[in-house]
Image 1 (cartoon, rainbow over the protein chains, first blue to last red):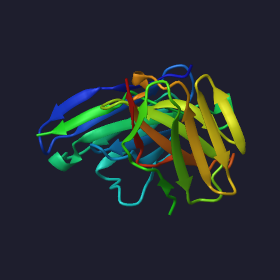
Image 2: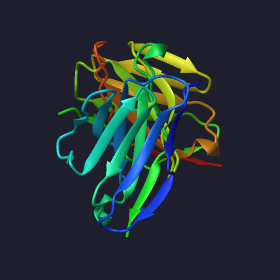
Image 3: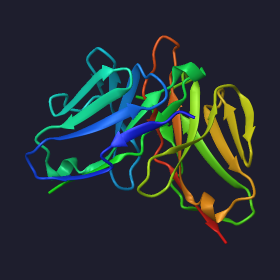
Image 4: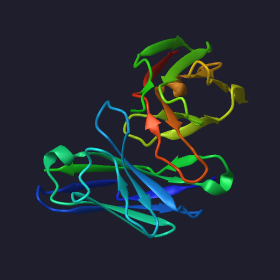
Length: 117
Length: 114
């Protein structure tokens, strides 16, 4: 089946620094990828839609200048958390849409735990 | 604003019994419906997808969709302790010309008691 891979799985960074998270679709091309954030005991919240070759679409309340998204190829999207603060500590999950399977099946990466200290 | 509602639980079910998980959604134009299982600290895992009214069965899992009532459910037969997890209902408005991100419910915490 489809596989979506994220890296790193866990990262600790200092407040004020930037962190990049990669999301790769391993066996299919993904023109669209999605980035979610999940705080403890909360549901997944869509942050932005990453479109290959164009600007990402951000959900209301998500700062585009803080969460930089780049989708330079059909198999890779990156999320950069800039000037990270402790409140940005969360579980970040990407997903990709495998349109080739028909319908709208979306597969998730393993997630990335970000801790800002 | 799109909303997906689930009872947060916990829902406790004896091993071997049927677990029934429910979900309602607010957006009538929603066309794709998904159930994900999420273990603590892990990414969601797709269990079932359903697009048409009625039942869809896959092994011990049955998804049921009623678009008129804006209701989707998941039945787990012969529940096992390994089924203990949080089950997320997700909805998508798939127009065919593009793809939107999923709208998730908050999840139902299911506990299968040995």
